Image (cartoon, rainbow, N blue to C red; front, side, top):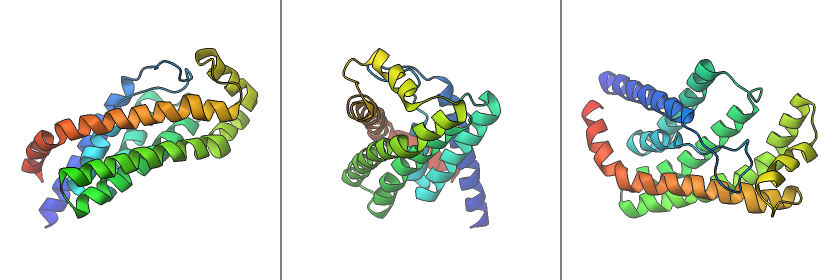
Length: 198
């Protein structure tokens, strides 16, 4: 039992390192603000959650942020990292919780859809009331300055509400939706490989 727990810890750390590495390969997407980047770093997190449960998924997300911050530092005074961590956890927890209780493809799909919707909705609330105000306060800028950055890339953005509806919501639905589809495609094969080590 102790040996199995150690193996799970090692695998969680490995997936966290893979996740941190994937954060390096980030890129912008059309209509999203330039300060919002798409990456596949949540893929190892959801794989870990499906394999070993929600707590392992959460631990993988924490390791991702810690390693990424140690390696690359921060350009957002840790506000971006905080947002990334919160949304990763909110995505992986419902998805892996549902899958762990009924390990079927249908449950996996339901879990991933739930995680995608919940994370996308929370992104609106957290950005509007916590992340953006905190970022603006730390950098001595106004929310209007953040809004202007979004307006440059998306003509539909005219105020904070339209930024959430026409910019951040589509971005997060796309991001977690794509990661969900990739998970469904690769999970079975990857799980067979990873299960050799746990």
